Amino acid sequence: MATAIQDVQAGRTAIMERMARKLDQYLPESGELRKWTISEIENALIKDMNEIARDIIHARLDVDPERVVKKARCPDCGRALMGVAGERSTHKHTRLGPIEFARTVGYCPVLN
Ligand SMILES: [Zn+2]
Image 1: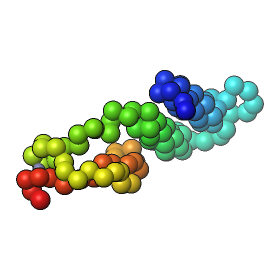
Image 2: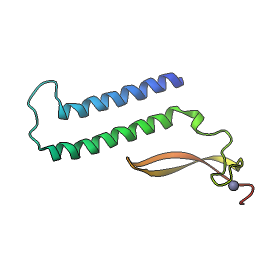
Image 3: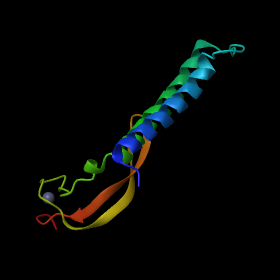
């Protein structure tokens, strides 16, 4: 089983390789420069940078076991959730696009 540090390194390596491949579209080390307008570059960059940003979020979620709080708390009152049985796949619409992740599920002892 990989250690957390190796997971971080693997995540960094994968993201940096992906960034390098994307950078090649804009600033290739060799070969011809693609002909495109500033608007085309702008639109491609927005898409590519958001993809990289989402990759970073996913990598961060993957390598951060502490993010999965040992005592998950109610988002409304802050009390420890009851009946925490596991994780459920969910997603969040961020300004960078949708992010899928697993979240701890339980119920609030007060609001229940
Ligand atoms: Zn509550």
